[in-house]
Amino acid sequence: MSNENTQRLVVVGGDAAGMSAASQAKRRNPDLDVVVLEQGDFISYAACGMPYMISGAVAESDSLLVLKPETARKRRGLDVRMRHRVLGIDVKRKVVQFEDLEQGRNDELPYGSCVVATGAVPIVPSVPGVNLDGVMTLRSFESGLVIRKAMADHVPKRSVVVGSGLVGLEMAEALTSLGSAVTILKRTGDAILGLYPELAEVVAEELARNGCTLLMKTALEGLEGTDRVEMVLGGGEVIPADFVLLAVGVQPASDLAREAGMTLGVKGAIAVDEHMETSAAGVFAAGDCVDQVHGVSGEKVFVPQALSANRQGRVAGANAGFVVAGSSNRLTNPPVYSTFVTKVFGLEVARTGLTMADAQRVGLDAGIMAIKASSRAHYYPGSAPLHVAVLYEKGTGRLLGAQMVGSDGVAKRIDTFVTALSAGMDLEAVSRLDLAYAPPFAPVWDPVLVAVNVAKKRV
Image (cartoon, rainbow, N blue to C red; front, side, top):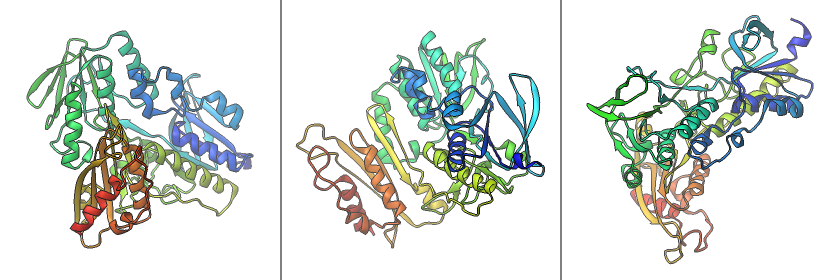
């Protein structure tokens, strides 16, 4: 292999993690030849914004495109090659094999280091009828555009959303806002989004208040229709539908890594170390295709999220660049805390850390306490009920997780709990925080403090 080829970083996949890796590597080493191979038509888009693009809350679809190929080439000096599908990675010869979909030819590209950022793919249930027209998944930007166009051409009278995760709930709201009657199928009988039952009930009531029908313990059994979907079979019921969104979750797109002999971890995700390096020397991985360490339990988890994908990409790109440069410097990727926040009609719903099921699985003796408080001073306009649940370790009082549901002030308050978890704080330490107070923003005793003070009494 020539010296020129050893000075090349090849990035497989051009979404959040891939472009973060490519940009970080080039920024740290401007002389590095960075090639990005992307099989689709878009790079670096805001996938989390797609339900709002479909509903029309985000008017222009192009506003979700964070970075366009021509901009990456001209301003960042990256060799971005669109419509290039990677066929394999030969870790012994250090080459990436690909197909140029435009030219209809196969070729290979030697590398000095490589970053795999293949993301995740939607899980499609193995039931009859999933290939009927009107049955879709939402993951890629292309799929978002297809659904948006379908809604513009014809708003379905009756929609069924299979799955009650973040995408399922956000799309239920989007479809409802367009005028479609929505039914949500939840396969299990456990609480929505892993929430404490008291908080989950608030979310269920909000769905019902906005016209959504939530069917618990209702597994998808099949779909029927002549050409287009007409009926959904689930839980022994027949549900009329002219649009079905399959939102039962995602799985890591790790086939390339597996075929190359790289070790896989949790749920088939690519196993990586703290530097985002795989079991193949000089090959790194980042984004929704990898596993990572949970900051509370210390276990490896598969938690596909936007922030962690971008952060992992930066770490992987920097370290891949160090390999090419012959440097021993290495960046370390921080743990994750399974933090999320979402909007369900008029509610903000957030969670961080472990759930009770998580704590029990890893052998922690956990307790949970839920309270209801006011989001602002009770006399100030706009004050609303805010439900908070705090998970803690019995005996030690160590904070393990938190959940919040309300119409006002949830989205940023959850960050207080994330910060506390990151610092390894217990309930006593959190209760001593000097949180900001003013009537338009919080009561004197913020709901965060109320929740931990009540939980302290249980410890």
